[in-house]
Image (cartoon, rainbow, N blue to C red; front, side, top):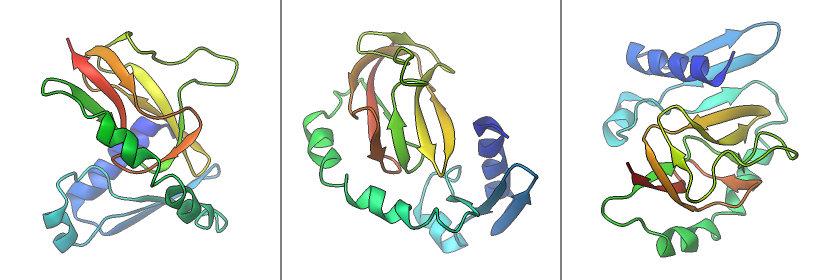
Amino acid sequence: MDIKEIQNLIRFVAKSGASEVKLETDDFKITIRTGSTEDAMYHAPVSAPPVYQAPAAAPAPAPASPAAPAPAPAPEAATDAPSGNQIVIKSPMIGTFYRRPSPDKDLFVKVGDSIKPGDVVCIIEAMKLFNEIESEVSGKVVKVLVDDQTPVEYDQPLFIIEPA
């Protein structure tokens, strides 16, 4: 199952009103839990309910990752605020940010590169799943806000884009 199929499944579960869905195959197990209806009233994005995978060892590292980088990204985000016409690409999940498909490959995007909707801009690894993050806008990369191979949090700014 690729990231697009997982994202479509999350959207479907969120729209259906189900509070939890478990999917199990020979290769993987995935559990999607949506918040209560009270939570939904306070959070605008419906397409981002938490995604949990079954391995018992996975929850232990998750709290450690977000706790350590929290102070570091905040000053960057404050000093690198986009101007009025610029767009920010944000992280759709908690995980580790990668700027290249593998250590021996070129970067997905660099400052000054032109991107269009559907272009992969980075990968975020979450629970041993490598999720390609695609641009939803077209434009030019103005700034990369996160260093390669660093932990990121949900909704953390990753790139500043000058719309085309």
